[in-house]
Image 1: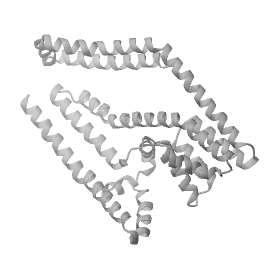
Image 2: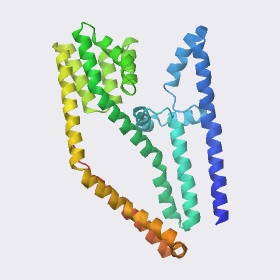
Image 3: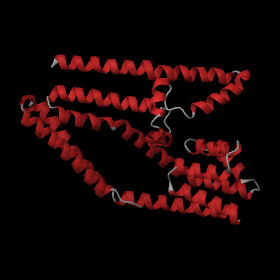
Image 4: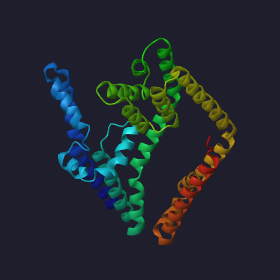
Length: 320
């Protein structure tokens, strides 16, 4: 058992060391060089060219970037997920971390169980952890964006009523509202300000923010530009609808609180019971782990626990 732990620690240290040497360190050096050049007034044009070049790179490591560029089409979903989550990582770092986690978990599971196929399945499942974390981060970011969106629309509407242009209203949102809605409107304003056609910038905004409310906003602006109308009133109506939906969502959460609490209890009881039994009678666990049948029973229990958790989550999650 000590040899297995030592081998696991050595393998993990080796992988993390390689990742730090070829991914984290080059990215840190690139970032430091970028800020040094940005602070130098004489290098303003070079900084602009560097920014345009960096926007198309998938990794700060040239060899990894060249390899990923060959499959750029397949990497677009990952690139879009990273962008929507607001993470500063690169596609290359994401792929390398996923592969490292898969290799470590596969090796550890194989050393413990002695069965390659279940160990490989555990490694593949563990490789999805970075994707799940990015999706959770994206979901939280979109929820914050949706909560801030009515205030942004109201601010743009007030700017229009005061006689300002739509782009000026977007600039006010970018300056006055916090992340994530401020940077998104800042990017939208900069894109149209530096030459991108305004309809294309709006469509790009709708792609970056996959929310129905953002699409309503883009559609309303595009229709108003073509056929005219009172855009301020339309934005006020959209903001009112979003606020009403949030009120309904809170009411649903209050009504379904008992069901969600019951689901959490049902999900948490088996792992808690397993932990208590391990503390009370560790010999029982040693006997189960030592037998092949016991390991198969544990794998089956974990699979059933995951399936049951997904079913309970589906039952208590009410779409609104």
